[in-house]
Image 1 (cartoon, rainbow, N blue to C red):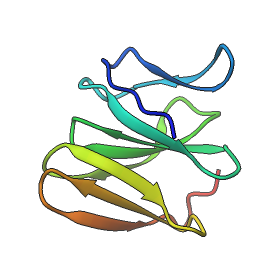
Image 2 (cartoon, rainbow, N blue to C red):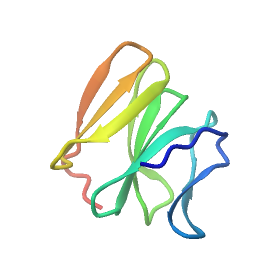
Image 3 (cartoon, rainbow, N blue to C red):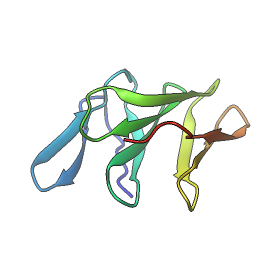
Length: 102
C-alpha cells in the first residue's frame, strides 16, 4: 500500500520515476492508495469525502465513491469485484465494480 499524507500535488508512482496520475479532482489531498493485484487500477481515498477508482492509463477516475466526511480507507474485495470504503461519517460502504473493466 502507498500512503500519501501531503497536499494534492502528491503523485502515486508505479515504477521508479514514473508518474501514473496526480490527485486530480481532490483539492484536499490523497490520504492513501492501493493497487489492484494486476496493477492496472488504483483505488485512492481522500479528505474530500471521496474514494476514486483509476485506470492507470487514463487521467480521469473510472468511478467516484462519495461519503459525507473524510474517507479513512478503501479496500478491494478478494476477487476485486467490490470496493469497501469507511469514513468519518460513521459508515462503511460496499460498492459493486461490475462493468468497470480497464
